[in-house]
Amino acid sequence: MTEQKTETLTVWQRVRTWLRGPVLVGVIAAGVAISLSVFGMVRNPEATPVNLRSLLLVVVLAGGSWGLIAWAIATAAVEAGKDDVPN
Image 1: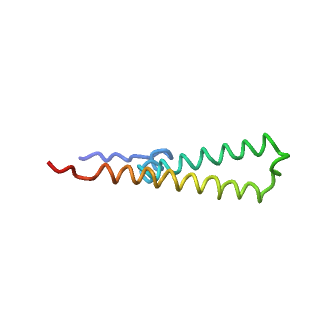
Image 2: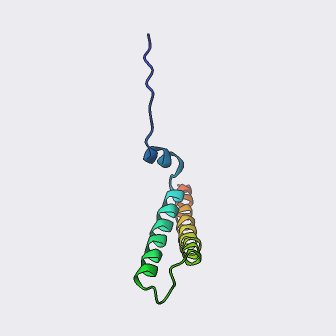
């Protein structure tokens, strides 16, 4: 009889199968940008009011822009590494 192994993937393993390479770099950069922006909002509430609209703007502007830029740079680096060097 053959014994079948049922592998249960953890949440981190499932995320790692979906997020690879440049996408992972973009998501990490977006997460760092969002967390630093939220920290800045909480630390200095006189500069930016802490409300739902401000938090959504932080997610869209800081996370989106830094995530997109980091993804684009990582994608360009991967594509540049794929170029064949002529002999």
